Structure formats: C-alpha cells, structure tokens
Length: 355
Image 1 (tube, one colour):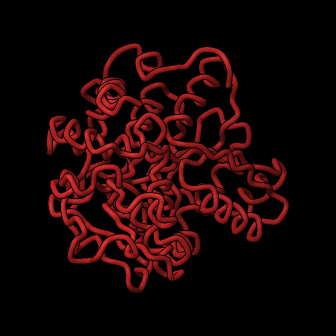
Image 2: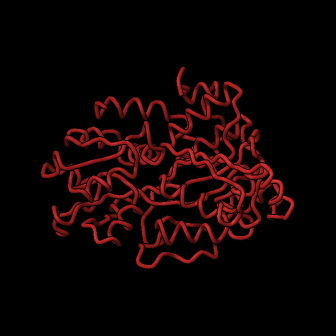
C-alpha cells in the first residue's frame, strides 16, 4: 500500500482507554451476543456472494490450508487469502478503513491489541459462532462477541542439534547472554510480527530492557516473522534462536530435521490469535460462514494435527508428542499495555538492536 503509514495513534487519536483494558470476558461474565448457528439460509447467502476476503497473520501455508478446507466444505465460495505480518496487516486495514475502502471480511492477528483498537473504532461486527459459545472458555471470548481466540502457540528458544549438544544448549533467556553464543543467535522483529511484538513486551516487562540491551550485544541475526528463526536454525545458518514459534520446531522435528525446542526457565510467552468479522465486510454472509468454520472442531483439529497449533476448543484432541501448555510456565501479555506502548516498543527495539 502506498501513501501514509498509519500508526496506532492515528487509529485511536489517543492512547488506550480504561474500557479497552479488558482483553476478554471474565469467567463469570457472559458474552452479550447470542450464539449464531450455521443455517441453510446463511450457506445460501454466502454462496451468492461467492467469495471471502481473509486477512491472515498466521503463516501462509496454514491460512491457505484453512481456505482450501473451507472451499471443499462449501463449494462455490472462494477464499482469498491476504497474508502478511500482523503489524503490516494492522497498517493495511487502518489505511483501507481510513480511506473508506472496505475490502476485508475476516482478519486474524497475532497481536491481540489490534482487536481492542478495531473494536474501539467500531470496525468489528458482533458475531459469535455457536461452537465458540459451546466449546471455548469464556476468557477466550470477547465480552461483546466481536472476536475470540482461534488458535495459540508459545514463543520459545530453539537450537540446531547438529551444532549444539543437548547438555550445552541454553535453558533460559539468561543463558543466551553467554559469550559463546555471540554471532550464533537469530530472532524476529516486533515491527513486522505481532507475536514478536508481544514477546518483546513480555520480556521487557519481566526481564527489563537491560536484558534486551545485553542480548543486542550478541551480534544477533535479525529476521522478520516469528516463523523465520526456526527456519534459520533448521538450515544451520544460526545455532540458536532467541525467539520463534514452537510449532515450527515441532513440525521440523517430525520431519527429521535437527532442531529442538527449549521452553525457557523464566517462562514462554503465550501467543493467542483471535479472529473477527468486520462490520463493513463486502461479503458479510461468507465472512460469518468462514468465521464459524474457523472455530469448528474440524478446522481446529486440523490446526492441531497438521500445524501443531494449540486450540481452546473443548472437543479437540491434543497433538501426540507435543508438550502440553499445562506443563509449561507461560508468560501472558497485557494487550491494553501493548496497545499503549506499541510504538515506543518498536522504536526502542530498533534503537537497541540497530535495525
């Protein structure tokens, strides 16, 4: 997209407010929107529209697989996947909405604070698929029914087992500061990836910017998305990743690649990926049908089985051999604080890492 780059302040006109500080409904608070079943009328109306525009921050192969599965279930409706990093998607939607262009039907992001802003701006439509209400915990559903958590994963440390012995591998974030890792580390960038922005917020909050300043002195290779560091260590271009998606490492390991995930002693940042329908969606019925499919047991089980994502769907079976979230010390974000601090985090990070 050409022209102006929109920041969060452009979207909001002010910093985060008190009401936006609530991430999801509390466990005792019911969503304000009635659950919506998939009906023959909805399917017929969606088929008349014939397409759905899906803006995805999950990896391209995951988004495309989801789209193909939907197309097979509902012939005659084409899914147009627009995939980019979460922060780029946020900018694009802001530019489009600010210009009166309504191109997005459904969007997911790895940065939950985007939904706080889209909701505050009145850009999201209240829509809760029936399966969400039946099978998802209340704390993963927006109180006003504007979005819910479609999947999740953990950000971890990882290493190439051909280059690093298990006994020598880092076990914590603190271990990454050992001089022996200088010039051997790779990590993602918060200006591109919502998952890395969340991770940067969590680490700067819990470990302090002083930790990241020390890490920056390790001559770290800088890449864009949270999916890039696992690839770099798998190829042996770097020995250790300082952050990156755990599911990539699970999939690589299943393929016999020389990688291993490390869930840091300090805790692993939890990344949740909501999905929401836009109020001015050009294909509103197809958007709702796609949103319902995204949260269905069929689609959720596919995300777990084929891509090692985590699901909050009560009827989805865990992936065999994958470390359960219940066994991991997790570091949880505060989306309202990410919303308020996003631009400062990106600017400080760029200064510290000189990128």
